[in-house]
Image (cartoon, rainbow, N blue to C red; front, side, top):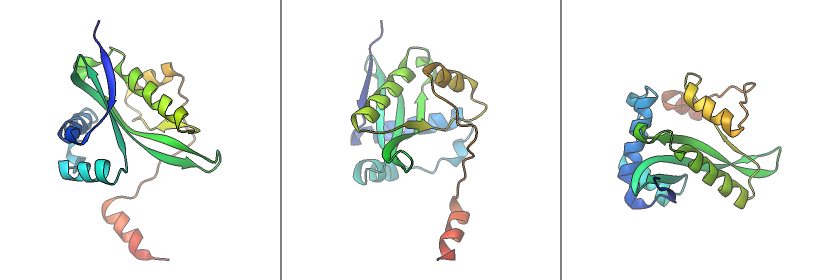
Length: 161
């Protein structure tokens, strides 16, 4: 039986985190959208603490990661955890690593008094959708995600009040 461990990432893991992000982007057919660098990740994860990362290992070998941050639910009046990325390397899928990462995040949410753990999933990613359903997660189909990035974000910022 292979030993699965989940641990918080450390600054020395920055190159590994970037490698896992690039692997996720390749899986999602979005590799050209990755502009993250080791420097940006180190600054924003380990210095500013805008996000946190869990590293999953199998017998000491990096197998996947979860990147998350705290948000806030006004309706619940409590913080929540938003899972930005969850990725397991293909050779490690089916071993329970995704469940271990989600379980650790759920434990963290409980310990921190959070009211929810949530994430988004691409609609074509059927294996992940089935995995989330098997966990008991409920799709929030009535919500549409909106996003401002790049030049549009800059243009809206310049509109002022």
